[in-house]
Every structure is written in C-alpha cells, then in structure tokens.
Amino acid sequence: MAYLMVNDVRLHFERYPQPGKPVLVLSHSLFFDWRMFEPLIEQLHQDFEMLVYDHRGQGLSSCAGNLDMDTLTEDALALIDALELAPCYFAGNSMGGFVALRLAARYPQRLAGCIVMGSSADLERQLAEFEPLVEQLARDGAADQIDTLMFIMFGDDTLRSPSQAALCARWRARMRELGPGIGEAARGVVHRRSVLPELAGLRVPLLVLAGEQDHAYSVAQSQQIIEYSGQGDCQVVAGAGHSVALEQPGQVAEAIRRFVGKTT
Image (cartoon, rainbow, N blue to C red):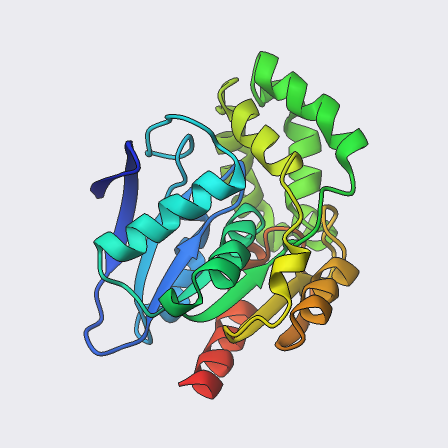
C-alpha cells in the first residue's frame, strides 16, 4: 500500500514491478476502487509492470477540490510524472475511460497506448435518468439504491450466472457501504463535458472494448470513439456488462496483449 501527494490530494496506489516490461496503468470505474482490477492483474502481472490507483474521493485516496473529469485527468498525469511511468499504456473502465481519453488527447507524449473499456467520449446521454439517482446518492449514500447500481454496473449474464454469484455478492456488499460522499464523484461523471472534438487526429494508439451487455453505454458509443479519432480498434466483449475488466478479465487480458504486441 502506497500513497503520493499530487495536486493537493493524497492518492493511494498499488504497484506490481516487472522490470523491463511495458508499463500498464489501470484507472477504475465510479462506485469501485483499484480492487476491481484484481482479476485482470492476475491475468497480466507477468507481462506488464502494473500500477493501479484510486481516484480522489474514492477508495483509499483523500478527497479535495473538484471531482470533475478534468481534475481526475490532471491527477493521473501527475501520478504518471511523479512515478516516471511515461510512456505508459493507460487503461480505464468507465470513469477511468473518461480519464484515459483526456490523457490521450491532451498529453499524447505520456502514453504508449490508450485502452478504453465500457466508456464514452460524449456527454451523458442518460442524464435525465441518472441525475435523480445522483441526488439520492448524495443525500443518502448507496445502500437504498444498490439494486439500481448493480444493474447499471453489471451485465445480465454476470447478474444471473451462478459462477459469478460470489463476485456480485462481494461488490454488492462493498457498494452498499458507499456514503453520501459518492454523490459528488457521480456528479462529475454525469455532468462531464464531451471530448469528441479533442479526438480528431488522435496520435496515441487506441483500443476500445465495449461490453456486449452494457446497460450504461452502448456499443455504438464505443464505436463513436473510433469514428471521431479516425483510428484504433473497437471490440465487443461477449458476456460483459459495464464493468468489462471485472466481468471478463480473460477476454480483456488477451485483447490488451494483442494490442500491445502490435504497438511495441
């Protein structure tokens, strides 16, 4: 367990050294923390030097200032620079994907490649549906909304499969514990600005992974990222919902290996 002060906030991170291997930074979803990547770390820790961290206001990181996507992007940049990780591969799921795209568009020299999972480059298309949920979270925390959160964050196969019951039970229990502070992080997500115009002419190699059963962001929204950037590859991950890296770590690991193999 390690911490680093960046931009007046104390960020928690975990590092898995693998000297001589490509560096892969993993950036988590809203309602989760770095632990959502534990299954993916098991798959990839021999192939990469890996670093996972908690966004400000979530997990074990402290909370200070704004929790908007631009601020989270500057935190990720500061982490990369302070730990001398560049040029690294940066992979983000959902909220982490918002950060990944902003890093790739604004600081291309820091990245060897950008991997976006279950995410979007556009404004929030379900703002009318999500805004009341955000206000309820900010008032009461997550316990009363846990069924809604589970539906948003996981695909149908994951929610119904006996083989995924332990995973669902673990994250259901963890998300139930989220207090009203999670509302501010959720506001940063649903009120984010579009970065579609920034993607034109993107120079960073790009891989976009869409969950086949994502209840939050459609496959079309993942394809839109490729269309606006003019390059990259969009792949649909079978049996995955919104939490692509957590639900199907084997498929994600293989896609990342292939992607990195093509770009090194």
